Image (cartoon, rainbow, N blue to C red; front, side, top):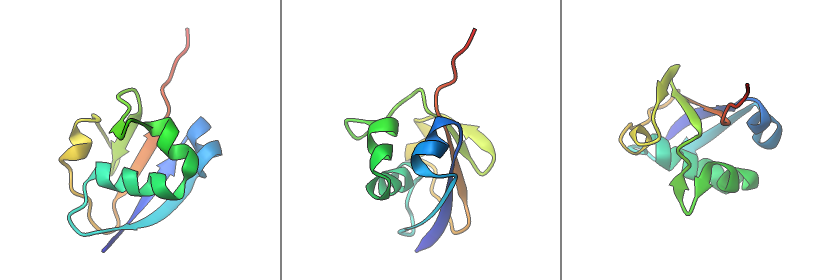
Length: 92
């Protein structure tokens, strides 16, 4: 088992809380971790997933580096890692 931290910003912080520590199985990916997180934060499933697929407009950071939603299926997490979620940014 690995313990990872999921941090949320902007409207996600209001919905999920600023910081959540979850336990995931060894070999879990970023996507697996987010799916596990969505089971504990009911609003997360609707906000970050659509039909079980990570919404492409969600901004993801993994250990302080931005990753694409496609990378989330390939990157394996380890104990102490951090995933950061930002909602889509818009403005003029």
